Length: 445
Image (tube, rainbow, N blue to C red; front, side, top):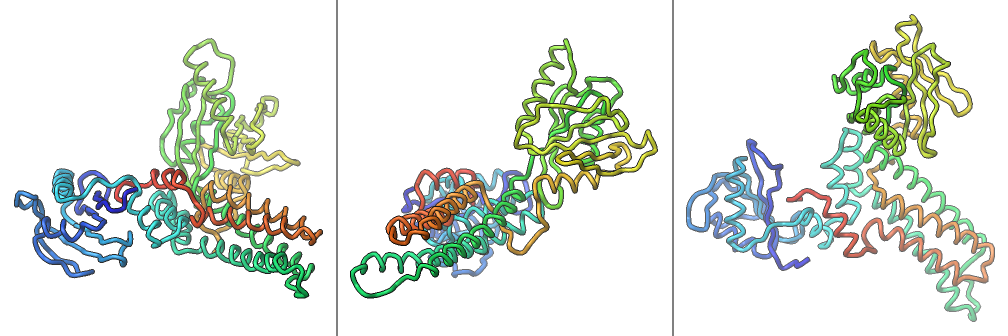
């Protein structure tokens, strides 16, 4: 990235609206402001003014805000123009700014500059995107915690402890011939064990944060006419799927997003599983099996009281299967949950809604969703991978503590653990990783 460039983008979504914001960042902000605003702006003071094209035409009226480096979001000079939300006006304003010396910003480039200029670490930068993409209030709350540095602080605590322990070990190695006792075997064993426990707590909280960020996939499956589409409609709260008494009505997979205890859940309704000579229905059944293969939770549905028609399938090893006995209203039965070893059966009525809360509770339990806690924060898959590697290195370090004569190997395992944790906050990173992370951001953020 060429950081001598000045960049511009709309910071509000595309389309018509009451207000639109155009953001400019870089060394040429003052020069551009002179041409677009034609008046001197005071730092951090809102100024009502006209916005001009390079030719002198007034394009819009609105509020101009100037933030001087390094006291801005990006750490550079930043200009924000708040005008009317007409796409045509926004496009004309951006064109004028580009003619004055800026270039279009890449996706996430403002946040990327904030990271590179030390305004936030990589976890906080990613939390900006997570906050924008949050599908529930709970997910937004946890993204905000990461943005405020809760996740980063926990990582830094472990890293600082690793550095301190490595310092003593390195000193012991460097001064092994001196009569100086930097280390005590029991102390090293205790500290490594404490670090392992500390890291496991972080991993548990990160897993919950990842679950609430990414959500899970729940697939409805079973024979035709067992009520899969009715259950989809009941869970989504609207008539998403066509419901008829004709077998084979659902020919393709239908997807809906719902929220269970703050967790995004992708619910997929599939074609009824049966032998069919209809090529369209056959394709729907093929897609049903494809969806099942990628499910986190499979809801295998059958009619209540039809145990001889129980659904059996080659379920994916990573999925939890919940057997759903539907249409209890026809039997005047009550909703209930039966558990036998690893089998979960829920009796409910998709038509009346009886037992739906029981089903939601079991779905949350299936993925080990814990009650919202103060220690949870937004986390991504790459964070979990790095944490897992750090845990492996600490496990190897714990093995080395049993033979303290191999201090160089112990020091190396601790260094690798620190390196893995450094990848999370961006202290250790690569240009390829940064490009991958920030390319998923919004333009203008």
